[in-house]
Length: 193
Ligand code: FES
Image (cartoon, rainbow, N blue to C red; front, top):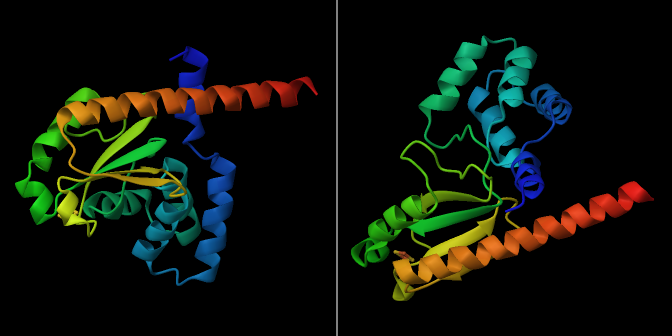
């Protein structure tokens, strides 16, 4: 991918510090100041992860040490500290999908996307990889779902194999490249006006 498009894609997943502070100031003034987990959940629901600025803002507005905020955010599995990729790949680990080889598919995707065991999002911000529970369509096992990070786009793929996954990932790479190129074009046109 062209460097400017890659940079744009990676940075577009990160909200501005001011926006995060404004959001946290609103939710901490409305809700119980003792409920740290609820506040963390609200921030994660808004941004898809817990931005560093969000943790600092929570510490400031709730008047609790930043180390405690980090401690809670890292203790619970539900919280993510890195921004999601433009597309999130959910690999079903329900019983039927597990029995039909989705663990192998997950490992294949991890290698294909160049992710180590601690990292869930690709360097270019294009994809995140996560395991998920049953999607309720077990007859199609093994199943994956690909969704946009804002949840506005979702698509299920059934009977997936490593070969099919490779094809799907290539299609999404082309799709993202087109989306980002269109976005860069719009930005340039708006700038010229
Ligand atoms: S176990 Fe995967 S869809 Fe049900």
